[in-house]
Length: 353
Image 1: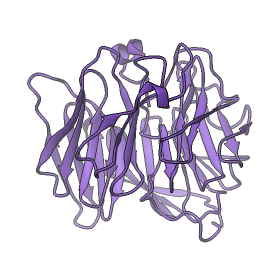
Image 2: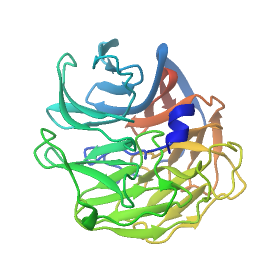
Image 3: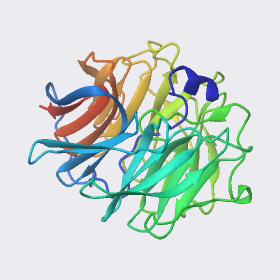
């Protein structure tokens, strides 16, 4: 997937709110009919990874940058990491109680631990290889974390931590499932990995597009087929989310044909073992990020991508377009009616009404 890195640095990655995400399972949403959008800030920056930490929205960006916006004080903090003359792009971000972690794409892969005030950072993992390209990172809890990258061999590339992010180690090939030639990941919105309790799902794309499932924090894996369009370098699953251990949604499509809206969205009700296409030839085309609406009983789903902002109140059967803005790459919910989205040159707040 080096070709896309050289062109637009897009191919490789997953979207998800981690184990420390909002509780999604309490009440059923009545549905939304409109949105109000406020611009939080604008800048010359590309943001594909955000995470909510209390009142702060942390982001990982291009040009060696990371930072946060404080929703309470309405102030923005940004910092730059200098590593010689390296041009670093961060597309993965995750949190624990004590730290924020950001991970770069491309060679060398650089993973940093950041203090919660944003002012201090420490390199905790580095990997040098011409094929290295990391796509997504999540934590199950304050001790255990995981990141996935494009294949270097014929297996999944996974690193894990069991000490809260201080040290990271690569899983041996013998513990990982084989990949097909041309199968990798998309670093579109930090949603290639989804974690729920001890459950973990990783999605792939390219010439093959599958879902990999682990019931034990990555110690063992199963691979499941999907009906999502695949077969070319820029086709497949770009994003995924799970409402609970059974109900999930995958999306993506063909990045080179962004308006193609067939075979680009599917649902599961058995934890990812089987998938069914939904809303075929309807609604949005290429999707960068999907998220379930908290407390919607798995019925509310929001997607951003090339077609703009779309919302479904019935589990993905029917969709309404709330915005035509194609520049949003990633989205996360603050509560059941408010979300933060970011992308090309901006971060916005979306009030669902």
